[in-house]
Length: 363
Picture 1 (cartoon, helix red, strand yellow):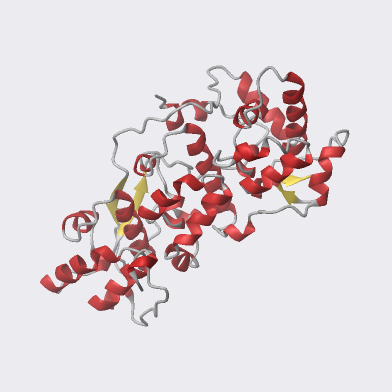
Picture 2 (cartoon, one colour):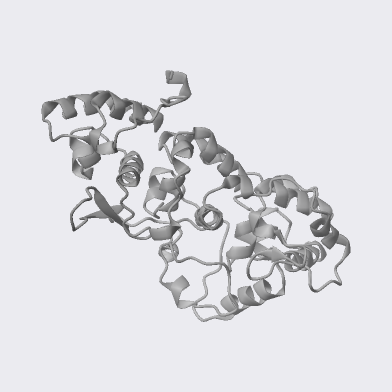
C-alpha cells in the first residue's frame, strides 16, 4: 500500500475468523483495502477504548462521530460493506451485487472504466474521491448526486440506465460491448428496409442476439460512423450517451441525440437521416413505447440543458434487524437514482411513475 495508490492495499489476506472476531489491526487493513485508510487511526482509538467497540457493530452515528467518517458516500460505502460482511441484505434483496464485489470495491479503476463506458469520464475524480464502488452505485440516490456534483438531468439519467444494465449482469462490466466487430449491427446502415432489425423489449438486436443496451459510449460513436455521421461522433464524448440510455430511457429520442451531436436544427434532412437509423437501431417496439410516453398528458421532455435540484432529505435510514443470531443494520434507501424494481422497456407504459419521479424536481 502507498499514498499514491489512493489509500488502497494492492492485496489483502482475508482473516479466517468471522468478521465479529477480527482484531483491530485486521479491521484497519480492511479499511485500507476499501480505500478508507484515512479512518484507520480513529478506528484504532475507538476500538481500544472499550471491548464492546468493534467495527462490525458500529452504527452510522458512531462512524460519523467516533471514526470521523463525515463524507456521506464514505459512510454509505462502509456501512454497506459492513452489512455485506454481516450477511445483512436489508431491502436490497437479490438486486444487490454478488460476493465477487469485494475485490471490485477496492479497485478505483473499476468505476473509472465504467464512467468511460457510459460516456461520463469528467466525473472520474469526484467518484474516486467519494470512493464509489458497485455497492454504492447500486443504491445511489438523487441526493448523492450533489456530492458527486452531477447537476445535469441527462447525466443523471445516463447513470441511472447504466446502473440498470449493470444490475442485469450482476455488475460484471466486462459484459459491456466496448468495440465493434458485430457485422450484423453495422449492416443496419445499409439495410434500412429490414424492419426486423433493432432491439426487442429484452434489448436484443434482431435474430442475431446482440445487445445494443450493452453498448458503451465508444461503441455508439462507432455506430454513428457506420451510418455516415462520423464528423459528429466526437461530440458524444462526455455526453453520457450509451446503449442502455438509447434503449431503456423512454424519453431519449433522435431529437435529443441530434442536439447532443450538435446537428443544426436547420439541417432537416440530416436529422431525418439520424431519426431513421435511430429507429432501426432501437427497434419498432421501443419506438412505439417512446411515442406513447411522448403523447401522454404531462409529458416532460428530456433536455440537454435541464438541471436537477436534489431534496434536502437524509440519504438513507436505518432499522435494527429483529431476531437473534445476527447483528448489523438494515438499510432502507429513499429516492434511489435507479429504483430496484426498474425493468427494461415494455409495450405498456405507466406514465404516472414518470410524473412522480424525483426527476421532476427541476431547477
